[in-house]
Image (cartoon, rainbow over all chains, first blue to last red; front, side, top):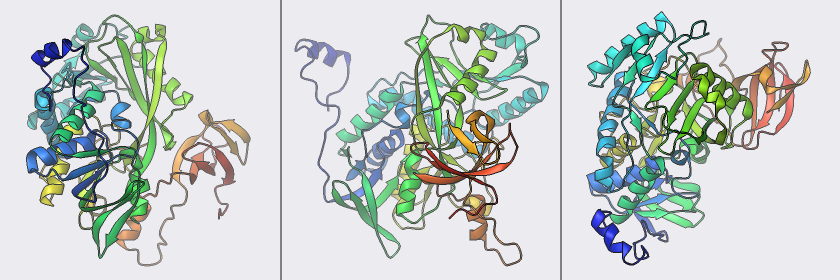
Amino acid sequence: MQKYSIFNLVKNAFSNHKNWDLAWKDPTPKEEYDVVIIGGGGHGLATAYYLAKEHNITKVAIIEKGWIGGGNVGRNTTIIRSNYMHDENGLFSEFGMDLWRKMSQDLNYNVMFSPRGIINLAHSDAQMNAYARRGNSMRLNGIDAVLLNREEVKEIIPMADFSDNVRFPIFGGLMQPSAGTARHDAVAWGYARQADSMGVDIIQNCEVIGFDVSAGKINGIRTSRGNIKAKKVGLCVAGSTNILAEKLNMTLPIETHLLQACVSEPIKPVLDNVVTFGAGHFYVSQSDKGEMVMGGDLDGYNSYAQRGNLPTLQHVLTEGIAMMPFLSKLKMLRTWGGIMDMSMDGSPIIDKTHIEGLYLNCGWCYGGFKATPASGWTFAHTIAQDRVHELNAGYSLNRFSTGHLIDEKGLGTKTWIS
Amino acid sequence: MLYINCPHCGMRSQNEFSYGGDASVKRPELNKEVSNQEWDNFVYNRKSLRGKHLELWQHIFGCRQWIKVERDTATHEIFNTFKADEEVT
């Protein structure tokens, strides 16, 4: 594989950049693989990369129905953070933060990781207390957290509404300075390029039609491009998890829901951080191109549509304008939607299943993008070793039966309620 | 915008409704032994169908009645609506 470097850039300039290698190949499916990963999104690509890199398993195929990086890794708001209260989420995400910091070097691909900090705004004394508690829990897990008062918040985001007589006055906020954003497509492409270079077959436009299971053991998959034998199969298909689970006669604690995001026209730099509204569900950051990147609530009903509905967008942006009134002056450039695998406690599942050789990675709710490296790393470990790593031990499938839920937001089973 | 035909009030916009989830889920009979698996299926496990989906909505800014709606989760087309106690086959 050609290394991306200043020297190669100069060298290729002499041939008008026409001699660069393809970043990844377009192989035809082989008859058999050691591991087949279904889903060529961020998590699937990362899983294949870490299988090859950490476990020396390179007879791997990624099976993707459409094109790689075309699902949620291409549709998110690029926020990376580990500001969780519960140990399972905090330690898992903080492990991921380390991978994020090294990612551009590790993948030889600029993912433009920008640790610009995230601020969760508080709008009441009670919320400040809750944030103090969450911040303390984070610090006990080695995650940076700073509790900001009103004046400190005002210094960082003076464009927010600090006027008198607002419905939701800003009391302060909880900041994780090491949180940030990254270039989402580059994450998928970087993982794909490295996985491909280590021998992983990335097979696009290949739909999984069924599974070959006998005597409680997986033997392979049936696809639109023929049958593929596999010793192990990993599911990494986010919003399509239930569709594949049905083919396996499994019913999972997951519902598929629609989440929208949008960007404004580009403007000059105004916002350095990621900021979230504490009296509803709205978050905003500014991209390197200058667009304000915004998102919020789910549309609120089961959907596989990958396109949104205006009432929810209006509701979300109303919250945005309450928080930062200048947003009302901006024109909307694009809106889009993706389908989320909403688990019943708001936390993901990375686990083995009752079928030998079948592994499950799903339930990412709103937080799939930032989990990409940690999810891939732990899922690769779970598949390669046939046992969960301590980092994803809490993300078990049977926690719903045993009562060991990880209900970070305290929403219960209706995580789509806003 | 979804338009939902409330069986009590007629056609109204989605802004008047709140979603209540899969309507095919049945609470286990309490006068018999209920296995853990049955409770799991009632509380947590969902089919989350792609296509025709029977679901509960509440006409919260209208008559406040719970209703059943048969809707396509891929196209958002609404085929039919029912009163909450109507059996849908």
